[in-house]
Image (cartoon, rainbow, N blue to C red):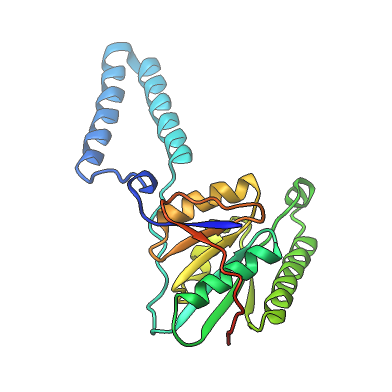
Length: 227
């Protein structure tokens, strides 16, 4: 299994609207609405206003704000936030081994398991089974790390993995973040995390790896030591 690191490359940068463009957009929308009232009366003016409002809503849904995800102030300790969507043993051990190999001293690991709901559970707002599955993912990951000589804590996160990471790093000063998952959704999550995280990020899969970024790292397979 190989892994690729992801950083802030030009391809992964999030587009940010320049501050001077916003007043121009607002002025253009207002001018179009006023012009509609002037040329066609209330009917056309209301139609243009409705079209403008709909366009703003659609653009907000398609391109929501994506600010950088920055962990809280670090204290010099080495911390790995291990986001587990699919608890693949090889990928989990590789993530911890790579983190341990690039730091001195002890490594603190926090396992983050975003809840995953089925359509029925989301429709019925059921939270019990999804949380139990997340707890089982955390327990399984802990067992894998324990057999390799490492210890870790665990936390259940939001259904949106990106939001779960953003929520977690407000209280956990992660020095690096690794996502373990082999699904198509994991690929999408990895691309967004690569673009928004301000700390080193890696995406590991059970049958390979994906992450926007140029560097390739081979699995070390070395024994782990952790706190």
